[in-house]
Length: 441
View (cartoon, helix red, strand yellow):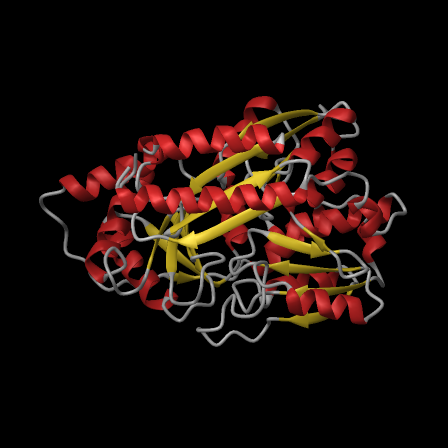
């Protein structure tokens, strides 16, 4: 298993290890050697709106240049733009400096291959081995990268995916850009489609990304939709690779709602298959099955979703967190693309968003998340495993316990037919976990 890489790249707090100058220069160099394979080539590098991005990128540029690569700075952008640039411009690989939905004090580094896909775990481990084993490091000189604006081409790409983009003209949407990487690009796409947009979270100051806004803080967006005559609302996260929606009534639509809305429209003439994660609502599995849709379940992480989609030729896949992948267009999550396609699917069918949301029945769920000091092995907690089995029988459903791959957090998901029993089970499992940790078993 990788030492520094988590579920989605490397995350940390600037300027603490591994987010210090020495490590990041070495990371740039090692990635250039491993992913560039000793060949000169363009590397697209973007960043979200965090104040720390500029310095982190400058250190990565130095390492990339020392490895013989040609870095190009895409500026403040959304993560899917980097993936799109890699795919369309035949880059050697791409890097996005972002901690996604995490608070402003964090940052992260994500890598894409030349096809716009997240790099494999094997490649992550190879980069780490290069960092750990290298004995003679080159001189890391200050690098002035090529500055490149890819926003126009990205907007062209998004708009080109819609058979009838004129359907958007004149509709009203609330758009929350989370004071993040898409704060300029997303409004530009909406404007070109003729959408009348009320904007939230488009004034980044380097320290307010995801603060009181965005996909994990949807209150402002929901309130704005409920107060006005809008078709719906969209909240992106800090790097806009995920989205959460609202219907016209101000009711939340998560990733499961989005997959349900998208699938029948996108797969009408193709293989009826969807890839979901273990965190997806059981009601969604039942709904898709009732519509003759083959579902595949994978571990959390959009890379896992993409790999399964490619294997099973599924056109739609995603996580309830709002990471949605439309493989016909891009092999990674894109909040702008998937949110607009959800709206487009409803418009094409003459439906409101609430009508698409009400097509399926959601099972009661309780998700608990709390911070931890250490990720102790769950396999070494027999009392916890026994309690989970007992509670699953009681609620006639399932309980899933996992550590976050991007932050020091444990998540406990309980799901079943009875809401009260589900909530009680989740809280009981949380207490048993805490007891097991304190007792060291």
